[in-house]
Image 1 (cartoon, one colour):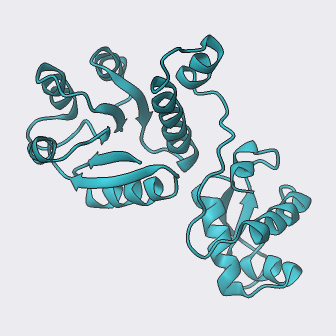
Image 2 (image 1 turned 60 degrees about the vertical axis):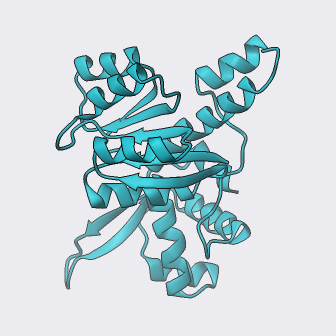
Length: 233
């Protein structure tokens, strides 16, 4: 298992990152901290393979943390997850060894790709002799064939049936009740599947205004040819 530490000062974002991490097979969260000082304390006591690092934090910011990390000779890899999108921050993060840079806000698909790519690279580095094709696939983050972990209560076969029905609907909006009736499952169960599909970026939730009555929320497929969903099927 790849041991991960999340360094994020916003408690809500930290929790989102934690939940996203738990969806990806092969990673385990060792620590969740809210400052650079806390992170260095953890590193002094615990073996960490990968750090998910924010830049804008009170006290020492993420870039200074990354610089200090390298100056101390610590080998933990870093994926930066930050709202900083200017070339100065990005260039410095990459110069000091960040293996990836994800700009907030982001979809789960982007983080999942980064983690799967990193896991592939870790596995490749365990080999004595490296193959160029395999190395290119990991470094360039090509499509991974690894089946992603589903959250508790989401069944792969049921998800496949629901996704096929959604593809039939194309770009037409639908409510939880409407598709639950078509599939033959309860609204409570269906809501869990639809929220998962929304979380990974396959669906979006819209407020639909009718001619009479209150507006209602309906889901809409973002892209019926979204290949990312097939990692879960």
